[in-house]
Length: 146
Image (cartoon, rainbow, N blue to C red; front, side):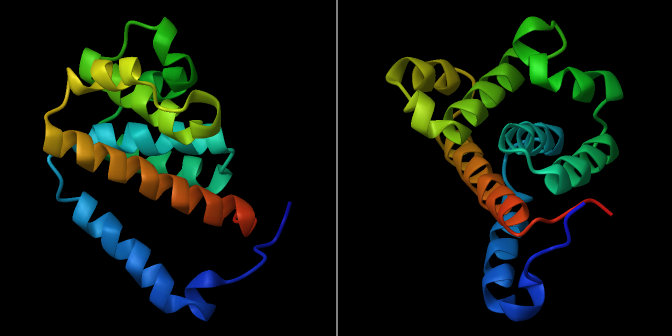
């Protein structure tokens, strides 16, 4: 098991506070809390961030998510457990998280835009960008669940 490489909260509190500020704004978005947590867990799974998967799985359960759906998240496309809106959010999460592979094509955007108004789509995109930033901090600095 790795130990954290840098205690970023202590050595760069100004940047930590800035990213945390974005999280606080996103918590007040139009997106449902359970949807935001599904996005965070799925991106964290794709990025291999054990710290974030652990934290956001617990947060998802607190937000009313079920264990069954959390366990099915890696296979969301093959299960009937997710709504069209959730599927669109997960598709957009995977597309933007795997941006180098997927390149956010117009067809995917159009599919996602059918489920979200412009503000929601912008907030969803910011939520995905933010969790990807946290994942890069968590993986890059070898953070581990406690």
